[in-house]
Image (cartoon, rainbow, N blue to C red; front, side, top):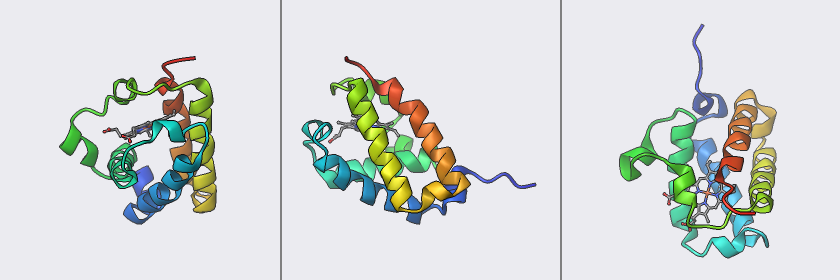
Length: 125
Ligand code: HEM
């Protein structure tokens, strides 16, 4: 039996783009998170598009441009509290619900991965 990557299960590039296009406008409007996101939305969308492609098994786009993901270290520049991690995950849950992806096995698996990664980013109380 062929084992599909999460990338294949969710429908590849179209879905990754839909996720970042839905997610970041929510982040930039969120009271808890917006103070951290002062940069260009297009650039963070591009980086997250590359990272999620890589995370889901669609190709090492992020590392080809930026090297090892090292996400915890890259997030040390920002004050990430448990509340902020929770807000991030809540918006991702909304995103996967609105895009219909949470109804799919791939979407559920992706949310599970992100739920494991988000707490690792917490670096302050
Ligand atoms: C837990 C809550 C999180 C918060 C508050 C947070 C916040 C941030 C902030 C403020 C930035 C920089 C934005 C900018 O450059 O304008 C960033 C970058 C990034 N975040 Fe997060 N993040 C969180 C979780 C995650 C998770 C779970 C992932 C992985 C799926 C992730 C992936 C990324 C990526 C790929 C970047 C770009 C890194 C780079 O500069 O190359 N973040 N995040």
